[in-house]
Amino acid sequence: MPAYIRILTPTGLQPAAYTADSLADAAQFESHDGVYTLTNTFNTFQTLKLDAHLDRLEDSARREHIPLELDRKLLRSVLRQMIADSGFGDVRFRITVSRVAPQDLTTSLEPFKPLSPEVIAQGVRCITAAGSARLHPEAKTTDWMHDRKLIEAALPEGIYTALLLSETGDILEGLSSNFYAILEGELRSAGEGILPGIAQQIVYAIAPQVLPVRKEAVNVRDLPHLREAFITSSSRGIVPVVEIDGIRIGQGVPGGQTQLLRAAYDAWVQAHLEDL
Image 1 (tube, rainbow, N blue to C red):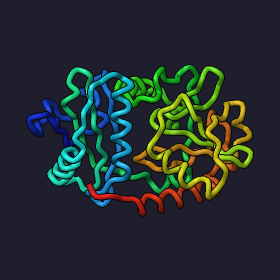
Image 2 (image 1 turned 120 degrees about the horizontal axis):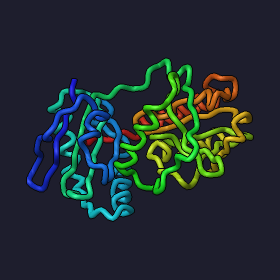
Image 3 (image 1 turned 180 degrees about the horizontal axis):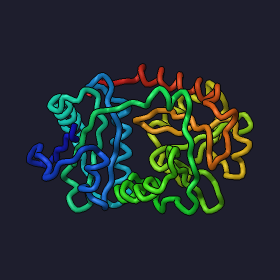
Image 4 (image 1 turned 135 degrees about the vertical axis):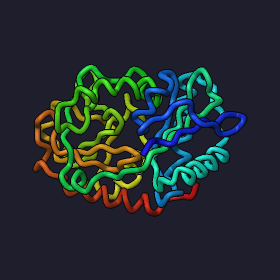
């Protein structure tokens, strides 16, 4: 089923001049010089923290000196119309703004596929990528959306994602996710040199009820001592990490505190869904 793509212009909603099989496929037609946000819907027409996504989109545009003015009411209406017209049910959607035409919003939808039960139950394996930290990570830019494909294409078989490192070996974030580790009884996650995540906002809201939080990165030297680890993104929630660079994390299975956090995260989501 191909992606459903429209351009919201000042004169109305227009069809795109291209077709694509997925959001990943559609990215090749989108600007390499712009900003974007990406999330999914629930129960067809409900979203989670959509205003937070749009706040970050506007912040990314300001950081990149792109003159963006969002009509949020109109955008919500357009998203609802597109979801209904697509017939996909729950969707994963991306809103992209280019520098050359910031008045036009490229809005792309694809059917949403949640994480498989196997990934949740078994966790994922990751590797670190030295020298891969982004120059301006605080902005969600389309150039990184394209650049990270090179890293993804080189991932060994069975590796879920790569984790970006600082020059001193601090683990900063994933290619499209935030990274967390449990070390010495604390939940640790980088407080700078990253893109602040929307899912991360939820983790920071729920985690203090489970264990102390410190916004400080762990280092690759800490890998043998990590009790648990996970990554988060808006479309995936909490994804347990059970191995990094061939080093088993904890017992090599999703840990108890990660499971508590995932349950609390899912409960928070259900309590905070909002209609488009």
